[in-house]
Image (cartoon, rainbow, N blue to C red; front, side, top):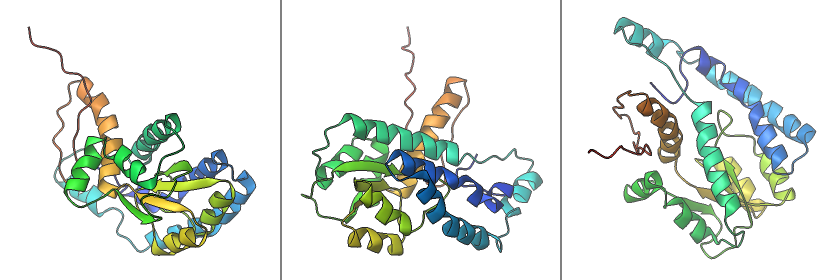
Length: 224
């Protein structure tokens, strides 16, 4: 089982991007504006995956006689939902430093911090107020720079994401929108772990590899 899409899912990566406009809409960006600014980036992503050898890992798995599946957007949805609900429950008086501290309460982020892989503030200062926090971790890949200004106009104070392009980071800086990068593999690990826990409950053995920080949240039965 892999996280990032391969095969025909990778070839159609841009097909999941419209969910970004829905998330921006929930944050206060009119849906028609979100869809409009997304179109160019969607086309760019479609072109970027055209030259790739989409089927290589799929065929390798077939030669080895191994079932192979990818669970990308569902797991990204899981981590996005978990973090957003957590921040929504908390005070909106967080500083950016406190946002990072809150993230480090998750063992995946704590381990990532030990490995110098986040969470990190990439726009803003530690003592700056976070304002309204939006978790931006799903929708296939990074969105367009134009979305940053729209989110700032909608009242979002801080973006918490897995990663950000330099173009988007600079746009956030121009619009005084704070950005905290929680970490890529660690965020993916939370989403995957929430999914894998459901398999573990069914008796499936999980053997982590390739950067997965495996943290099980399944309550173990006490031995009598």
